[in-house]
Length: 118
Image (cartoon, rainbow, N blue to C red; front, side, top):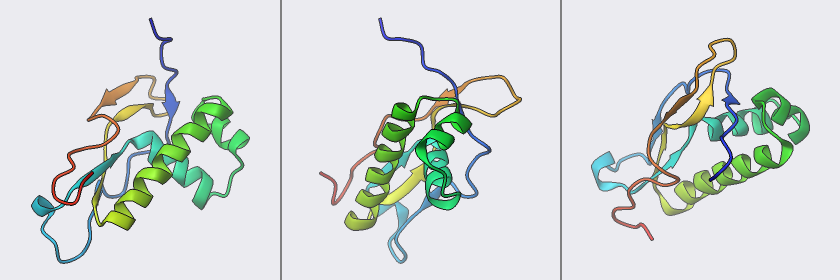
């Protein structure tokens, strides 16, 4: 039986929940799904310029877990940019500090692949 997942703290939800290439209808695009905690890892690392140890402490996870979440989010964003896919931000396993309840949901690591998917 796997170990229970530690709640990953995030500061808040995304400002937008999807990004897509311009000029192509969303229904015609394949998409990748970046979980909320992946977006938070990108925010802490890339925008706040925190080292992994500090960022991991902010998210209430180990440095190794933070590194894995960050690497997965970077991979998904790179895939979307290179392959022209829509990025959907949703789901995951996270909690807001002070709220005290774990949120879970959304799809797995990747969403539907549609045209141009692999």
